[in-house]
Image 1 (cartoon, rainbow, N blue to C red):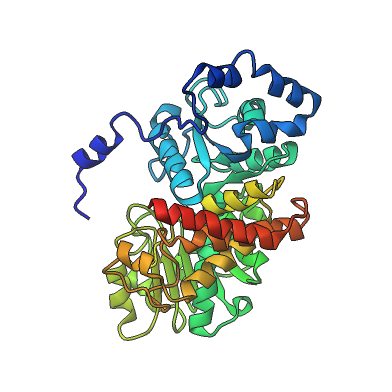
Image 2: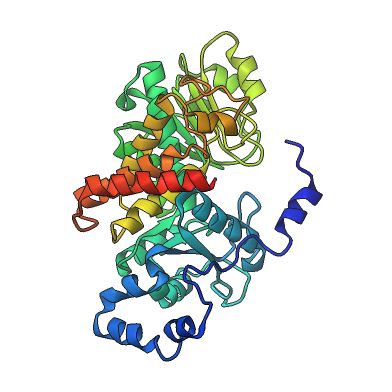
Length: 433
């Protein structure tokens, strides 16, 4: 891609989002309805019946994109102000792919010292989000450093009656699981027999491990900057200790011997050719550090020689991009539509299965027009759908909604009618595009 720094800054001039009116305001009659005196009527209705809030306000389709700026992309702790372009970008993706209205909520003074320095204070974030929650139908947590992000998500999810989802944890995990499901098909292996090495024990690495285990994986080794997360280590936090194992392997190189899958959510160039050369036959290497992967595709190609393998990264200029935009817009679309109180593990597993299934289907003409040069036939270079595949709006959203109802996270509805409504909405969106 020939995108320059000037191109990017020019694109961001004036920001990327703004207010869109969904009701016309063209005469006095409309003004009286929109504000005084008419607005007093829905105010009284909501006071009388709090459930009417979703009916008479934008809450039903509005998601807060919340951050304290402690873990922005791969750039680290740059503060709430610097996070805003990312939060605006997230709002753009919410709307463009899921037709969800997202709005940035960058939080200052949520650090331990109460200023905009130091580590995240989970209680301050929880209190702040709880205070703004009445306006929103869902909370998308973003770029909040581990381990505070785990406590923040867990406590907010328990306290609020709307979905709370930390995309850096679960979004990456859902897309990764979809890729591994399709790798199992290609390699003719069952999830339960895979030896999987996850390099990176932060938010994404921990949740990827949990999702893999929920899907049947039995042999998952996590590595952090000090090596394999082993049960004999005394420096582990609670989340790491949950997944610590007894093993003689000390380094990520040790762990990769005879491994079927490598999943990297860590740092650039930390894996060597000799490490992947020792992996099992037909391995999968998902090197997702951004902007530079743990090992570059050309290095993997040299290490593999003529051996078949699957390679994926977080970049759009290589095949098999593991990109969170494949997940969060549709997870929230399905959850919001059925009034889900949470986005639970069954809903996440359903999203991963739906994503994997779309990649196995022949691509549509609409997708080919967007990606005219891409090889999009299910196989080792195409295990994950493309973000602009409009089928995702229906398939993933529907799968999430169905799982929400089956798991009692949402009230029962006519699920067939819901799918029909998604298909019609998608047709209308395609016409606009």
